[in-house]
Amino acid sequence: MIDTRGLSLAQAPPFHVPARFFLTAPFFALLAGILLLWEGPASLASRWLPLALAATHLITIGYLGLLMCGALLQLLPVVLGAPVPAVRWVGNLTHPLLGLGALLLAGGLGFGLPWSLASGAMASAMGFLVFLFPVALALWRAQGEPGTRRALRAAVLALLATLLLGLLLSAFLLGLIPLDDFTHWANAHLLWGLLGWVGLLVIGVAIQVIPLFYVTPPYPARVRAWLGPTLLVLILLASLAEVRGWGLTATLAQGLATGAFVFFALLSLRLLAQRGRRRLDPTLLHWLVALLAVIAAALAWALQAPSALIGILLLVGLGVGLPAGMLFKILPFLAWFHLQHRQIATGRFDLRIPHMGSLLPLGWARLQFGLHLLALLLAVATIFLPVLARPAGLALVLAALVLEGLLVRVVLAYWRASRALTLPL
Amino acid sequence: MNETISTFMTEDHRHCDRLLAVFEHAVERGDWEQAGGSGQELKTALLNHFAREEDRLFPQLLAVEARAGGPVNVMTMEHRQMRVLLNDLEQAIGARDRDACLGLVETLHFLNQQHNAKEEGILYPLADQGLAAQMGGILQQLRAG
Image (cartoon, rainbow over all chains, first blue to last red; front, side):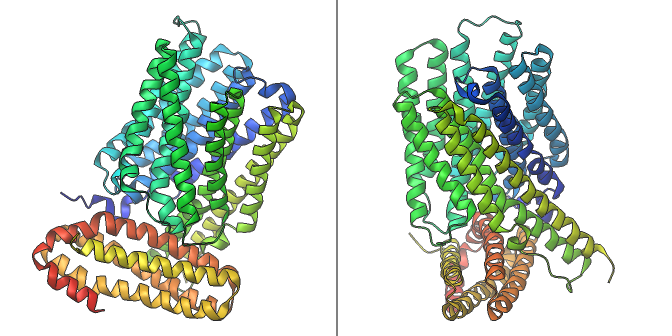
């Protein structure tokens, strides 16, 4: 039976729900850049260094967590006809909990403060849990592209696994429970977080969005249907093997998962090469760099390069860049969309609603992309030339500031237009 | 595979997407001669598509499927929004305003894509199901204009 609930006007959450997530997120990329700028050459020597762990969690929970959760609350009703129940409440709770959790967790990991680690882990876990259950319910009812549905369901499961493993690791660090081999559990946490939650979400979104945005041929039906579930099984196998210490199985499963991501990245690049809309907009530039970063990270893994290099490629190249590129389209469209509805409600058809290009000027978006690319290249070079850590941090800070400026500009233009529409004629 | 309302109308969506891409490329190159022609082609194709739905498909669907009422209203309202954007676009082409053309076409494309996703995901399958008995006749009407 076909469910038409997803098509009511009330489907979209109010503008301020996703906007709040989007406006807060860049501050966490900014803080990660400041850490790099402050600590300098020593900061990226190993992924286990306290400040590297702090920067990682600022990016994964503060920046990515907020952006992905905010975007999903908006995306699920529109793309899959699945409104998230109690969306205002979910937004009101998840947003501050994740923000606070990221700060406290980074403080705890970076400066060795047990109270900060404990409260940060709890706040982050609660923020994600408050989000997970209503979203799982919405995904259960979802319709539309089955491949996207499957990949997003798998991503949500991966988020739950990442979160539980993160709580376990925090409990160990706080001396609450013993763990035989911390490194293996940490690797499992990382596999679920990066390949599972982030990787599967990117696949689910790409399958839907790349053909729509750029008028490309669709992803092949078999890829759409099976890539997400296959990766979920491989990640499960790899993390089990990692924790159990089955070295060969872990390497094999990770290798297969890595291969699947490379295949996906190459396929996406090929589809984009066949795109109908030839325009090289800043969102597309971010997609291209993110896909190339995935391929480079896989090569680095295969060549047994330092894990910090793989981390930089995935966290900065894919994690920081791609969501910024998506925001260049999502936020101005949402502003335009809500202004349209306000115009219909108030009948002020004498006023002209600003279009997406005037809400978010693409020249500045291109500058943001350029700064981001510079930050990525400098951060990668830091692995070989540690002295570049501070310039990399500076570029990261500047890219985050320009991103924030662009988003604030959209929201201010929205407010101005919205007020004008409400004024009587 | 047999042609259905879904396959026919989805292909019409893709046709409009291709016209939009051609138009955008012409504006980007600054080829206003071509942009004028392909902009007109895009407008005609989209307006024809909306008319197919509003004059033929939606009334017949509403006659057999009460649940389609809400979605049809939303779709019709989004058609109105796209008609406004098409008129603004025509003015921007006339003024040879490159930035306005590109910003408007981006807005039109984004609105149209999320509109199409809802039609292809929910409304057309509903029509295939509810109008299965009249499929041949309806397809003939849709093809006619």
